Length: 139
Image (cartoon, rainbow, N blue to C red; front, side):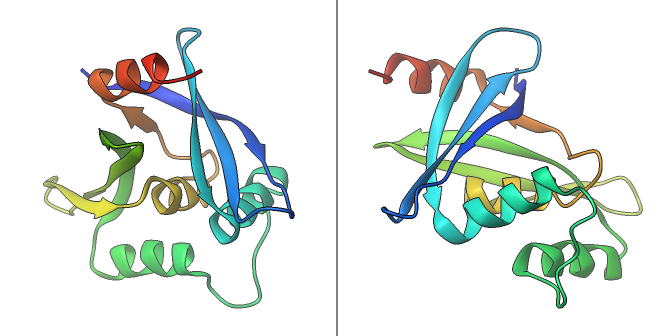
């Protein structure tokens, strides 16, 4: 059963290419980090700090939302469903007008960036297996 998580922290360092986001369990204490790129980290950070942030032109994450809506679907949630050799995998979950759930392969950072374009942000889920692996692999 997937566990609902929330974005807990974003650590941005201009000295490195790798940035870190922390996801924390909504109804619990478990937390784990995911290393992401600077572009995704700054996009997520701007949306979290300024809910009304609107770039002058659509960013890739806005494009994804706009495309789904133009096709009659809505972005429902994200699911981080796999961890393989310290690389996380996610699914962007879209719901069609008929109620069908479609899952699209995504990097977790891109999926989270899409989730935070909404106010309130869309639900972020992590499979229990991935959550256990992520926590057991932490130093």
